[in-house]
Length: 179
Image 1 (cartoon, rainbow, N blue to C red):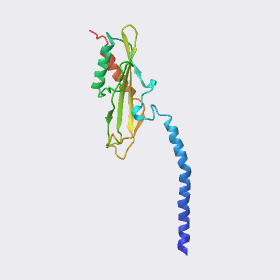
Image 2 (spheres, one colour):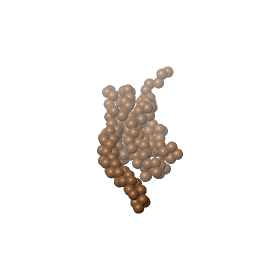
Image 3 (tube, rainbow, N blue to C red):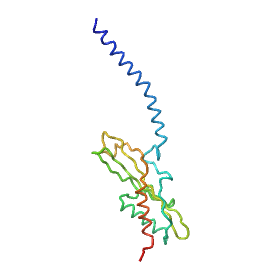
């Protein structure tokens, strides 16, 4: 008779733990919904794009023709490791978008991927302005961090320093050289 009464407190503990878990679960779901509204880009990682505040803007610089700065920006992107994505790039919108530059870091569980966005604006009288944003996403899948296909990409803040460097490189090709 002593054995059934000894297991009674254990059974109550299990039921109490289940009730507490079921009570806490909705709070976790609500917190997850709250976190989704504060994402810097969009909930769809593949179609995410940077916001206007994520762009670094160059000073206006002289360009003989728009074709020159368009071609030079594409070359600078390639040299920096961002291959131009032909399906997302639009000359009529004056926007170059790169493919994802993926770096899986399985030993550190810190895989990231980056995409460059370059927009061109009129600086007046043969001048152009370049706006650059580097979109960053982090792989949150720690079960298989070596697979980019199974990765769960989550938006991170834009990389302003890389964007500033890329904007400077594009702009510097058209700046007058000191003798």
